[in-house]
Image (cartoon, rainbow, N blue to C red; front, side, top):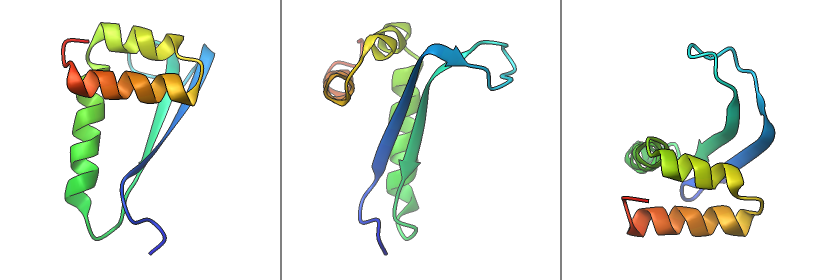
Length: 85
């Protein structure tokens, strides 16, 4: 198994991408989670955590403003420590 733990990749588009979403809104961030096949609980926990943050307007705003991997990593850590972000 090449994947030993949950790994995330985040793609950003400042212009937005038309994914033909039901709400007709453009998508500005795409998040890919990869995890070991033998540990689905960690994958589900990571998905829950990401969705929890994405429900916060302030988090989405800061994510769209982030321009580097370091800024996104910092934002995620801050959001984990401060759920009201």
